[in-house]
Image (cartoon, rainbow over all chains, first blue to last red):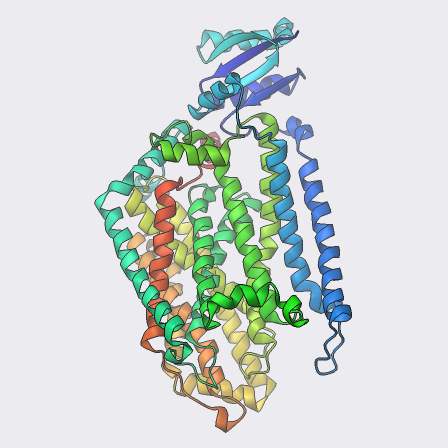
Length: 173
Length: 448
């Protein structure tokens, strides 16, 4: 079982400072919970790649579906001769195809976002506690307790503890 | 400037901002809120009466005739669709351009988009005469008669564009609300509100993974909504531009309509921001600086609109098409000349006042300018639609239109409906984005 440290920061700016200091130089296994997102260049690897990809796939599918549907309705199922104009034309299909592409992309990215956010009816007690702390403006860093063995991490941790900017909880999983 | 420091917004922490939102939710019991809500509901009753008369007695109660089948209803429809555009501009386009000042006002702008779209939709629905059959016409049409709707028609594109714009804007508003609702679900006293907030944000913990996914989702939706803003009003303009009616059949229509939409949307946003400042005591959040920036946007879009007017007039005279010429001369000198000249005054001359910093930073004066612009933009739509239809190719098709009581009551009531929906929404939901504004304050502090 891994030993986990929960570091609760009273102020987001302190948390952001601490986080950027530590994780720009060290790479401990960690997760944070915060009322705001941290912007940091070294954090770019954590960007979600799956969601934009899903939006792209859904958009391409929507383009194919919309074009086929318009072609089938006006060119195959009920070809209507309107003043000798062609039954189907790519140019005139652009507005509906574009709108449908946006619609399916937006809807799919929302659904997948909700899905990967793990909606649950009943949450573990620890998550309820985290939610409560977040609503009070606090930020929480969940990190492998092994990080304490690192001088760099320990120095900042002790400094922040001395200044009473954080509360440290130990937990065993 | 002596008033600048006084008007600079204070930097609030996330807890301060949560308290401000909580307080704004409590203002529902204040006298001025109750008064405004009651007034909006009373004004909405005008629309109820108009709609009741229309559905019970038919479209004969409207002033439309064979030459002018589209009149006040389509004017109002285009007007409200236009207003909805600034919402997406503020929320999506300014987000993509990293304009952090939008943090305090984008929720109001997004709500404006949605309720303006709701209000706009009532016009085409009731113009059908028998709206209870609308679903029947749209859904089982191919099964009933073997004929598909005409996907080549701009009216059909309109249906797609507006519904998808409404759904996408709703999703965008919801995504923006999630972190705020998660915070407020732990803070508000009302059990009902807690349950509602929890329902919509039950999964949200604010973990790093969730924030990264959230950021990607918000960014992609903002990127998709941005071209949607341009496409929706372009498609609305195709309703006119692809027809052969003189005055409508022109390629300037799409950019002209988009510029006008953003212009009227900014004006409407100024009015709503001024109301929210007063109503929810948000002087620190909706600061004079923010109001000035929206005023600048209004000025720029107003200049784009003025350029579109000049281009339209130039090409009509330069093109030497006698029908187009006659149509424009009729707009300028005919039965509807007052509408045309007042429109030019309100849409081109009045916004030039915004070049003056003192006017941009004066809430009452910018409110006055915005209201005049809104009147001007409504007259613009009227001036495009009615006079051009009144002067057709055939003299037998030339007619005059006067709005009737029923039409005017629906128009007045639509403002009440919009305000009622807007006030009810902000009675229950946070008026600004807590996390966005907190982040903005932190960034601002770093650079100060």
